[in-house]
View (cartoon, rainbow, N blue to C red):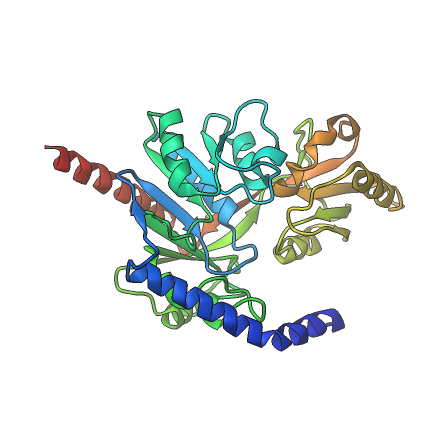
Length: 364
């Protein structure tokens, strides 16, 4: 462990009293919801699929939303609803051709760009935003609630909770000592648990050990995924450029957990340099100038700048400056291990089918 990591870990331990106080508040809040006293969950007569987690940091929620969109969109009229974290606007908004990341947030903008035919909405109060979205898009068949598990005002019909293989919630503690923003027992409300960012060669024995430690309910399904990176594409022209063992890469990164990405570059490129920013950083023209200067300082013929899809949506506003800059975007996606993708997809579709069947019977 390096000095910075040791210092951070030691500092977080000193914040234990605050973590305990936070945990008590979350416990009381959940009890009020559980007892339906003062705080109440609202159920909609509509298929709602929630993607969430109980910890802060990157567990792969956005790529999982995209996985579901790729799977569901050809068959169902599906929309996404997010809070629009760190956007410059408030209230409900439905993305259109003129929408920017500042108006709806990074991840929703990413969904909007990659799935232009999918309605993408934001709203801090999902209880208000869902009826507005259904009014604006009356032929909707499914809504995916992005990062909504810990916000219990709306009760989704299917809850999918993600947990990082390298930071399983069962071993974590409340903020700010740990990364938990909700109780571990809250995961019992999930229908599906997905262990993300697993090693691609995860063994069956290791899988069984994790399953025993997670101790899921008999009704809960558990799956394991690994991260896969696709071929980088130019941020403006979308020209593809594979990373080779001769490339030196400047990584421009403002995400919660860049470790898997750095591990990938360590394997793929000759070397890499990192330009770090805070999660959801709003890039300025001065930031871009620093990135270009840092890139020019790399004194080799084969070099490139690489960024994430989430960071890219906050950089595309500098379109004119980026046209001739070798800035490439690295796509990321989930791959289900143990050939269980079809089982996961079947479980999701079965929820929609059963919901519609029950709804039709109730109308008779």
